[in-house]
Image 1 (tube, rainbow, N blue to C red):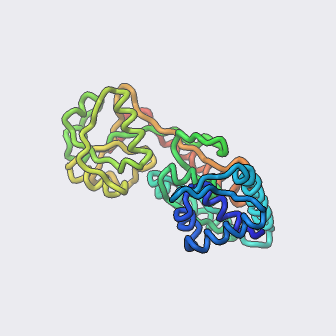
Image 2 (cartoon, rainbow, N blue to C red; image 1 turned 60 degrees about the vertical axis):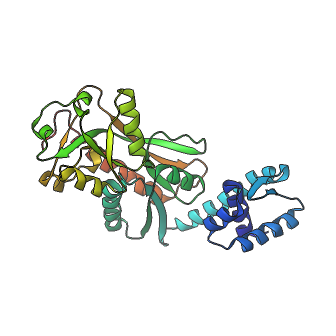
Image 3 (spheres, rainbow, N blue to C red; image 1 turned 45 degrees about the vertical axis):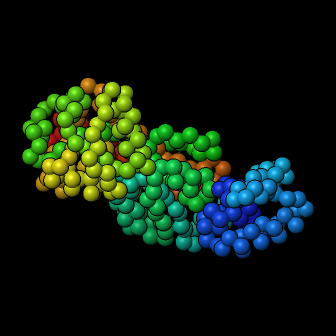
Length: 305
């Protein structure tokens, strides 16, 4: 029995499809199918019902899945413990959503490179659902994502609660106002991140609670593009405090909404059963320090433009 056979078996179980499992495993579909067949011959049981394009675990497959996961975790944990040897280089993999990676994680990685030159960090920017799945499947050591996160295999550590700020162009009528309410936004055009973004979903939930339906005129894949639409006077938007940069003052003004101010809570997620390497702990320790500094900059009054 080979470890790669176990990995392919788990991939098929997770995706329910041999083709998707092959794509995730970076192997051709016929090769993956053959390896799973070899595994079935070795254990003496069919592990999947092959129902057209679907692959459904048999009773034996379901029983074998938990053991296969435990074996892979133990092997990965052993490798990570060896990687923590003080004379060896260490590598960790971290993830974050697109409204966190460039503003919090990237500067942190640059600082860690100076403090711990033997700590190698791979980073992945993605949507929350993809990052949660990557942590569950062992592709990431940790990730920083906004709540909610609902998976019993994941540990969730609160990191930072920050306001979502109204952002307008310098020449917008709101830029000189000291108070803005949700009702004032009725005639405005909004720029938003795409529907897959957790920020977009959270903003929709907030406005839904306020019985307000924003008119979305521009949907963007990146925060930088969204800011350009706002700076050009074509729209307004809501962005988290972290996304406010010093360079923004040339074209953008950030304001707090009066009344029920929206916030988001960022958390660090890790797998409950995954070995926590010294490198991961060093990363999180410095992350907590950075967050304390960030928390100290969150003001309770109207922000200066």
